[in-house]
Length: 213
Image (cartoon, rainbow, N blue to C red; front, side):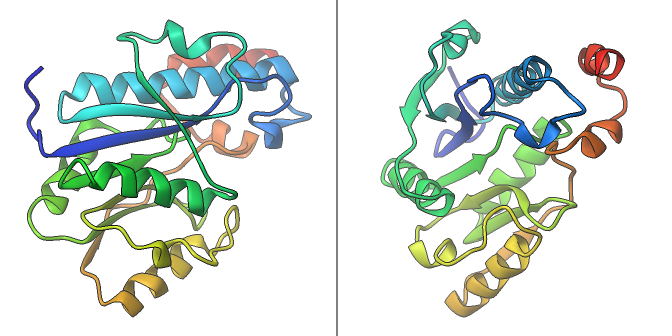
């Protein structure tokens, strides 16, 4: 396939869909089964967005055991890689560093932001391939939904309090200390809680979760 950014790689991070281990902050408003269904829908929605953008090669980096075979049902079949590292920061650094050994720029995206579009992805890749060291996609909760790099340095991720509202600010501090040039996108909402889910409009595929919880 011919991509608009053949020198770039897009990595999607996703947990394997294991009952009781995904979207745990949705309980008790959602059942374990509903939380699992939501997780699978978000992963699939994100993957389709990335693939259909036809902007760059896509790899799906996973954590956990996909005993259900869910990842194999995605179309087209994803190129699967295992996340490696003791915490989220180490896993992200490993994946980005691996990608940057093969590509000029690497964009890493989570699977919890259904409002992410091809236009946003294109903006990130344009910035990364024209001189930016880093691009951040802030989340409205103080984290970020994506990070793109044109060089790797573990200092970007070391000591960050993952899963808290200070992740974005701590990352900014590390980028400043490195004297990197970075660009920030308009903040987007990710889906971690039922309150987040309630704020999403226009995504008909989630109607059953609204109706049955």
